[in-house]
Image 1 (tube, rainbow, N blue to C red):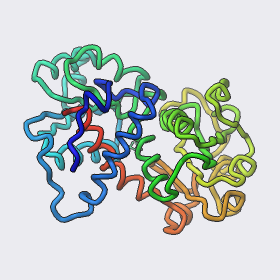
Image 2 (cartoon, rainbow, N blue to C red; image 1 turned 30 degrees about the vertical axis):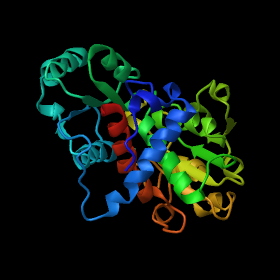
Image 3 (cartoon, rainbow, N blue to C red; image 1 turned 180 degrees about the horizontal axis):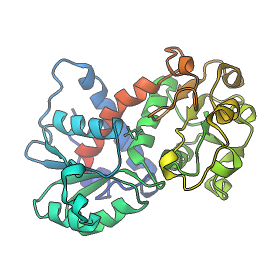
Image 4 (cartoon, helix red, strand yellow; image 1 turned 90 degrees about the horizontal axis):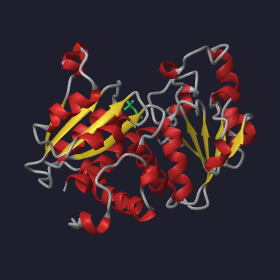
Length: 312
Ligand code: CP
């Protein structure tokens, strides 16, 4: 495996958002991730690239995919990985994010992976610690490793991103996944269609260089990829929807709406899914169209690449 020099290949100390990355940073991360795909399918998955390094996972919001894949990624690279159980931590006694970070910093970790409900939390933390910080999702701002794993999945299936037409549909206003994907897909040359009801669509969305639609059939027309998003109920301060049934009728991915996309269009979803609300359950499991499981699989490779690059 190639032993790249981080100082030459990537200039950033932290991975806080796609917006901070250059196209060569992105290509470097994706090329490193590709090298881990086969390793993750092999019987012996253990490397010692990060032997002697300490990784702390600090998840202030629930997570299945991101936390477990960061933990597996660190262990497969040989790091000592500690996932904080925040339910049993001093956070419960009122300790702040900054005090928690400074306490952990005193133990000399090499990398902290953080998910937090506040937009900008990972940036704040990165200013308070000596080690590298990887953003595993901050509020509605960014989820950079999700966008990177989505890009790797698209490239794996379609062999390119440039020139593809990609629809992102659902709760855009609350979605860090949407924002990171918009930045990354635009950077890599895709045409991005954003689809949402007006109250789940950011008012200034067109400033991000995308096409916006309230009619899902028009938005997915001739698309190569249809990426569905979860309704972020936990971030909704008032009632955004009249009913789940009505939402599904207009914005759920069903076979009749998917028919407007290209015949070989792929379905993506970052998870967790609300079956029967954002997506028809048979479509979610359709092995010819859905790449949702592949997104999860490639997420480990992307996180291994990020840990290797930012921890070395
Ligand atoms: N896609 C994603 O971030 O999933 P988790 O919330 O399970 O980590």
